[in-house]
Amino acid sequence: MILNSDGVDYFCSMQHAFSYEKKKVIQALRYHFVQRPEVRVLVILVNVFAIVAAVLFYTKKIRPEPFLLGSFIWIMMMASFWYLLPNSIYKRAATFKDSFTIYFNQYGVRLENEKGEMQWEWQKFSRFFESPHFFHLYFDAKSFFLVPKDGMTDTFRHELRAMLNSKISK
Image (cartoon, rainbow, N blue to C red; front, top):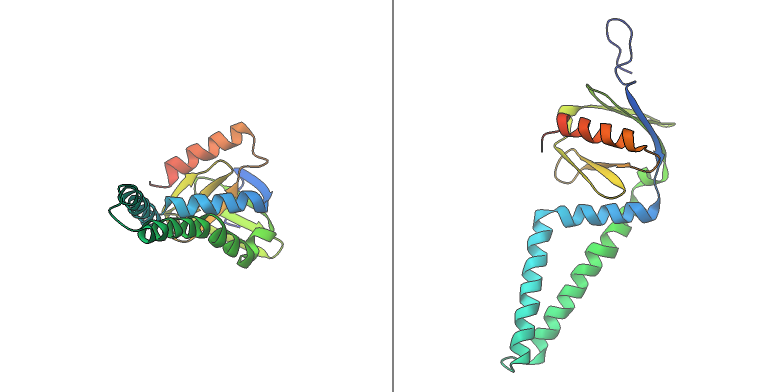
C-alpha cells in the first residue's frame, strides 16, 4: 500500500475484483498473437504463397505439391495461433486460475490476491489495447496482463478506458 503524507491510500480510486474464464482467456490470447507484427507479416506471406500456388496450379503451371504444401502450411499456422499456442499458455500460467482485485488511480496500478500484491507505476506499461472481453496491459512486447471486463459497469469501463488512454502512451 502506498500512502501519502496524510496517510491516504493512493490506490483507492477504482477497484475491480475478478477471476478468469478459460474460454475468454483463450480468445484474448488469440487477439494477442494477431496483434503481433511478425505474426501479421507471416500470415500475409503464407496467404500470398497459397493464393499464388492456387492460381498457378489452376492454370496448370505447377504440379499439385506446391499448392498442397501452401495449404498445409496455412492450416498448420492457423492451428498453432488459434489453438495450440493459446491453450499451451493457458495451461502453463497459474495466474489464470487465481482471483484478483485490481486498483487503478492516477499514480499506478495495484494487483492483489490471497498470495500477495504487486504495484506498478504507469510508466512501467508500454501500451494497452482493448479486446471484446479484456483490457490488455503490456509491460513490453511479450509481457502483459489481462484485466477482464466481466463485472465492470459501463461507467467503470468508460472511466478505466479514459484513464488508460491518458496514462499509457500508445
